[in-house]
Length: 592
Image 1 (tube, rainbow, N blue to C red):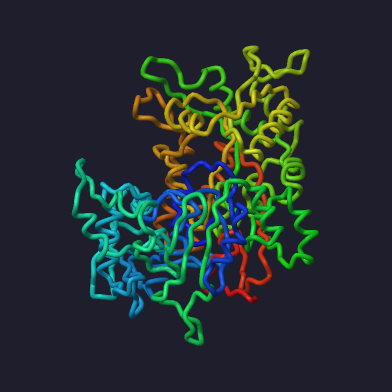
Image 2 (cartoon, helix red, strand yellow; image 1 turned 180 degrees about the vertical axis):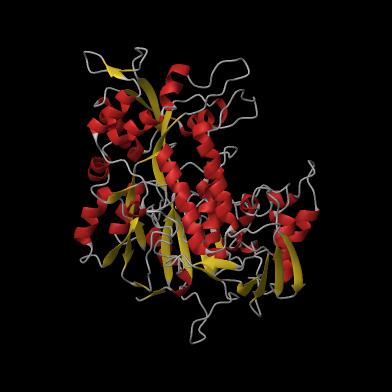
């Protein structure tokens, strides 16, 4: 899944293969106390990040977390505790009876961080000139394509405070997608009109991290103040931010936010324990240690059930051929992988409960679906979602039903006498996945399958999945969120993350086959995006999840619990797996 703010601010979470679980917070270096001594008076929250920001231009961001979680807002937001859509820059909206027209009314008196008015012109500019601009590489554009046609909404100004979005067909994810950051026309329009030597707008090189951060004009609760590469990013309160509490006191209450940059998770833990930062993600292996220190060190460990996202193994079901006629997958192994009984046998042979107990110290849950457990669209087993309990004998019976057999050394053979053996890959350096892979290798040996487990460089892995398609089985994960529609890039047979049966245009594949169940899942995801009735949407996505589990293109594994330790001096925390500890940063305060 996740994300301090809205799912669609980080659309790429659905289609970037995760190197690791969500990294919440961290801090490092020995200069924190010196830095604090130099700090201006006022309250401050020290959090952290494993690397430097990549850009100060929100439209070009492809990373998460990012600085824009604190510096920008869109027309709407998502409540990080309830997951409900709620007003942000727009105070209200009206949806037409035919669901093809949404009119937003902006709050009165909105201003940019430089004091200039924020009006409907900024909204029109942001969508028509930036997000819909094919020459600007913004991933937000993918979010806004509607239905099967992939057309964009028509965005028009009604007056200074009202904007209309006209849709070519009903598209229920639009509302959540309009959490995308609104950008300032009065500063950025010249960067759209001026072109570089290749004919692209110089916007694409505007507000890089070499820019004075104070020149980045924003509309969120904080504005950038200072950036020292490899050390820290400093944010200060945006005095023009619109939000006030019930007493008309301006928010946010905390004066400064400091991102301390560190590249080591163990240092995060050490610095938190020594009082150097405000919070830290609680990894299962450190839970017991931190729990013992919780009262003595005056912090609270928050937990909200399984984290967003999925982990899984997948077999390469691609039956296509390269231009030279060679199959993408060895035909002998392709026959196994495309045998549903084989995939079901593997699912039954993986002891996922032991995986939770050993790798996650018991702090996790079994996973059964491509949609995160925390999402309201998750279809649970108690309502009929198929599951695959650990059962070695059942796995063997499924194999026998497809003609597999055992030799005198209990090695599994197919009906033609070929030894069943395949290579399982994952990204090297991810200790959790490496531990999972080692267990899967051991578990499948119990049904006679030889697994060659090979962690490889991440870039090489991505190339194999996307370009050469030369792989047999992989262990990876996708991040998730509240809105399922982002998963269409996975479930559309032409989607760029349909990697269990990936299409390829360069060089083109020959003879690739798409199963009817693949088309049906895609159809249901499109149908779900066209339905505005929430109960009907849940039913549609429930059907899709059922088909996924019946056909097992992904064999889902386990999910760790979402946990964080937060200093008790921070008041107003409403922790959730969706938003983490600081999704409502604007209303948090620090009690010295």
